[in-house]
Amino acid sequence: MKPYGRLLPRFRRMPVVTRLVLAVAITMSLVLTGAAGFVYWRVKTALDQQLNDDLTAYQRSLDRAVRTGAKLPPGPSGSLHQSLDTQGHVQRSSEPVRHQALLTPGELGAVARGNTVRRDIGSLLPITSDTLRLQAHRVTDGSRRHVVIAAVRRGHRDEALRELLAQLALASGLTLIAASYVGYRTARAALRPVERYRTAAATLADGTHTLRLDVPADRDDEITRLGHTLNHVLDRLEASAERERRFVADASHELRTPLTLMRAELDVALHRPRSVDELTETLRSVDAEVQRLADLSNALLDLEELGSTDHITRTPVRLPDLLDAAVTPHRRTAQKAGRPLTVDSALVAVDVDDRWLRPAIGNLVDNALRHGDGSVTAAAAVRAGVLQVSVTDEGPGFPPDFLPRAFDRFTRAEASRTSDGSGLGLAFVHAVATAHGGTAHADPTGPGATITLRLPV
View (tube, rainbow, N blue to C red):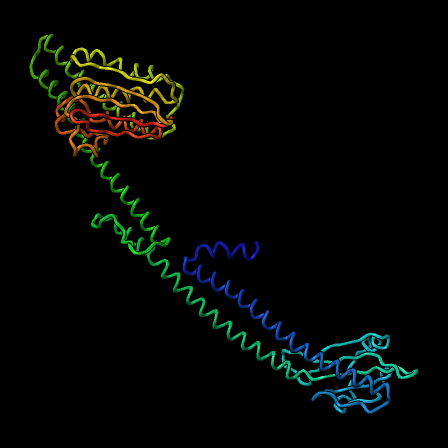
């Protein structure tokens, strides 16, 4: 496995602050190295250019002196020279290099063939003495050929470059330390709210704290928006937990009543011998309570099934047929009560799941017949791609404080607490509307009430 293949998993296991600081340090190291390299290259190029210009000027003066047979002129401070024949024998030379061969045999042969050789003697680092830059080429004096070598010392140039390297290393090191420290402090400051949110969330399990995180109201950065999002999620969780508690309490109440009545009927029947008529009446009462339990269970199962839109299968359905199929089972009840039941439907076809929408409309009609008064009207129309189905009655309407929770499970207006029904009818209607991607809305019409479904089709 390659080295980075082993380091990457280890890097990912580090704390976020450590990873951020390492990322800043590595990035700054690369940037500083690149910047320092560029500065060093520019300064070195300028110094080398100046050194080469001096060397070239000195070389030309030596060439002229050799061609004319004059004395070799002195060059820049610390410069040296040698004049050799093509066999490498020293003819004239500066005293410090009189007995030193400045050219290798290969270089001497190259210059004798007419090439120019330029190279450095000594290194920048480690520090060495007598560092030179030399240049050699062939000079012809009549029929004789000479190899003329001009050399200048690189001491000042090398010293300047070494000083530059030291300053760049110091500046880069201090900058890297400062950048790493700033990155560490910035990362800690940026992640401090996250740690505060985590600590606050960890204390919510004991139930002694309010389900809210302390999010500053005067900021609008990513962490603050995260805090608002978490608060929104906590609000949803708190509301969901409250609904679950209310659901369990109401379901227990709704189930306890029929079970208690069944137990009482059976206890009375078993307490002493009963006639056939009395036993038949007892069984009918128990059957009614069992049916009530079955209806309640079926309603709960339907609500759970509607919790996913995967159970919605849209097919084209004629709107008049849909409304008539939903209303027809309730016409006998309306006739017995002497209440008009009318249908007003547009002659269009809509794409809905009539398996769910038909009983939802039936629940609205049944709810109007149970708790409303006067005539009941079921109307349906399509406007701007939205199916609008409404059921209106002329009864007392909804109490104002009941409207916000009219579609909650097991929720009934106080006036209807003693009437038949489980409080799941409107919850089922709302679930059907939500599964279709629509909404359900209750409006008091004064007198009377209207419940409207709006579904995209």
